[in-house]
Image (tube, rainbow, N blue to C red):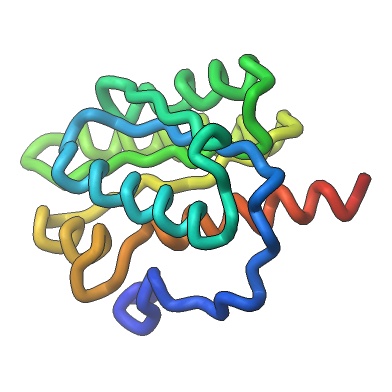
Length: 163
């Protein structure tokens, strides 16, 4: 219910650092592309609003959400990014597949964050229905991609302040 009380696209523009010198990776699942494409667009548009340059946004696709961990790890290994935004969408079905994909992906991204030096932003939408996903991909609850972009910018800024 948390999202029901907070629009994913609402934030204080002035609280977000300038992103003009930052490099971003976005790993996007091809599965549920109607949702992941909208999330990606939201993330890219928001990064650009805060000064990110086109040439500093690297986008790669992976077949499904489970592959987001591997894709994110490879993007980090490339050395081309300061943060990675992992975007996927899993909608509950009639089998336990949903639980395994969500748990595995979540644990994988958490492990990358716990053991690495490059933040990986959790942009996995996990919903019971396609309508709930649409509501979070530019619908009535905003766009999770916007929220992920802001988080990426703020995490890069966090690291820069520590150096």
